[in-house]
Image (cartoon, rainbow, N blue to C red):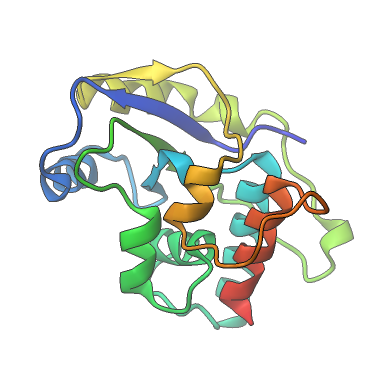
Length: 181
C-alpha cells in the first residue's frame, strides 16, 4: 500500500495555544487540501486511505456532513457525525508535542472501489511542500509512519472493548466506519 501523504511534525515546544498554531498553519498552507491531524489518531496507511476514500465517496455523493473536505476527513477519522467533536478528538490540542501534516490527494474515485488506482508517488509529489510547511512552523520532521496505539483509540473516544481477537488497527477502522452509519 502506498504511503498516504502525511508527514509527522514535532513542534519545538508543546502547543500552548492550538488556535494560534491552526491560524498560522492555515495562512502557510498552499491550499485547502492540507490539514493538521492529532499525531495519535493516525493508525496506519490503510486507516488514512480508508478515511480519505470515505471522504471522497461522501463528497461524490453530495453527502458530506462537514462543509469542507479537510473537516470531513477529520470527522471520519473521529468516527463521529458531529464536526465540533471531530475537531476536539482528531484535531490538535494544547499540550500536543506533535501532529501529522496531511495532504488530501486530489484523485478522482470510481464508485466501484476495484477500479481505483493510486499513484505510488503521491507522497513524494508533495514532500517538498510538506517539508517547507514543517520548517516554516519551526518544527522538525518525525521519521516514522502512522501506527495504532491505545492512546489514539482513547483520543477518538473508541468505546468498544479491545480484545485479542481484533488488532488495534481493526479497532481504528471499525470506529472510522461508525462515522458513516
